[in-house]
Image 1 (cartoon, rainbow, N blue to C red):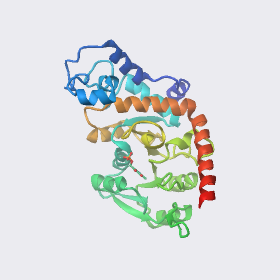
Image 2 (cartoon, helix red, strand yellow):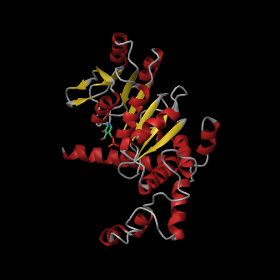
Image 3 (tube, rainbow, N blue to C red):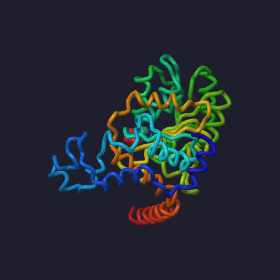
Image 4 (tube, rainbow, N blue to C red):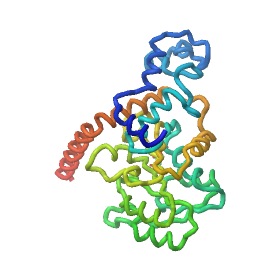
Length: 311
Ligand SMILES: Cc1ncc(COP(=O)(O)O)c(C=O)c1O
């Protein structure tokens, strides 16, 4: 899937192909002769009573018509195309083991054991664990620190440039957009600087899903021309906990290779409850994201003003 396809699908962001297929299956009331063993919740009555029947009916596995996450060709493939279109990516993968699995797949897709990656000192533990899994090792670049607020800011272009000069053999540059504190780097300059030395840029956007969908936020990884990004839709995009996206924007990154890397750790029994939440959250972001984020910004500035009056 590439280029034109993405543009075509981007026009149709009201669609939710995966959610529709699952809803169809739920409404069909087929007798469940396969796993999961709770059989639409009949085997877990106390839980069903609280969460409702639909969520347990949506908990499907090995069922015709709902595709397979490890090699999608039907409704998941369509839903992933829409996901790519919404984020301005050339390719996208659903993740049901959080951005953690996306960050690790980015590292494992670009490095082999012994390689080095330039990485901000304030990186999340998923990145460090990615080094353990891949056999690559970090070259740290120090972000700025705000002494007054006592928080880490982001890596500057000049710090990155120095690190690249000192480590010309590094295989990639990792960026965080934004940090846990909401601080975003000048990502466009970071991408330009890394690309000038032929280093791909891998972005941890665990806290940055929303940024693509409103003009008042800093630039997103895909818009800045970064090569890959992992985004926690479950944090700021409305989907359920654990559900994230891995995005690719670079013809040099082979999506089939990335898929194989993801398949090293993908479960063979993905939760369709989580996957459907990604499909619907993507639609909501694409169709109503700007409107919802307008309101979020309004409420945020109200809360900041109210806080200033109190403190
Ligand atoms: C900066 C950062 N990167 C990556 C992650 C991992 O994201 P997830 O919880 O979706 O696996 C987190 C989680 O809090 C994070 O704060």
